[in-house]
Length: 178
Length: 101
Image (cartoon, rainbow over all chains, first blue to last red):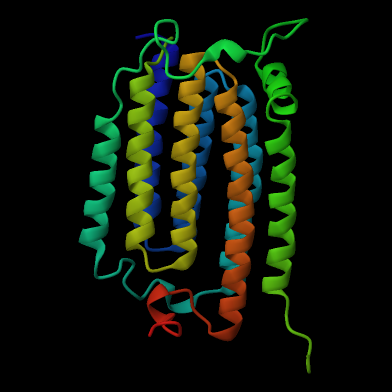
């Protein structure tokens, strides 16, 4: 077993374990910290999969921005009786069954994906040719992002703008008398 | 190909199942939203795996879009949560029965 594969399996087991801990801990802050562990391990898996840019974005955006945002709101709300009550609803066996069956179905669906050469899943014909120094995938992603994906990329900015305006409107304190 | 794509998709399936369980079973809205993030991460993982397998950068581009949508979802979801909390303190889903018929 070579080093990258051993690394991959370590990170796979660690991410499954931290995800399980995250959804079962009683203290919400502990859950958040386990989710942080999960995100960092997933970033490591991205590195093994040669997706360096995705790994960097995962650490910066997910672990750095989104999770801190969640933690911030969690501490802002200051939930006193949160640890006293039951952590799961009464229907949790049903939820476990749904999660297990979904995981089982998706596990069974992971058929041997055919080779991209002989009858592939998606046409890999539209590969973007990159001139200059080939190593690294950042230039490939950049060419794809501003080439075939230019319109969705711009639409993403609209989504983010709508999210900003929406969250400000939702969380704003109503002015007195209006 | 050092890691077979089936292994990555299987890992993604397990993580997604854990996220589904957390979303359905937890009573705390913040932890339900965090479970959604776990599910989105599982999807990103399979997208990156397929991108590696098919040697096509488009999978990673889609994963970037998923991350952007996740950021938007976190902002709107937590804004809703703060607005809810102002009207009625607490983040338990069982207490939010105002819209129940």
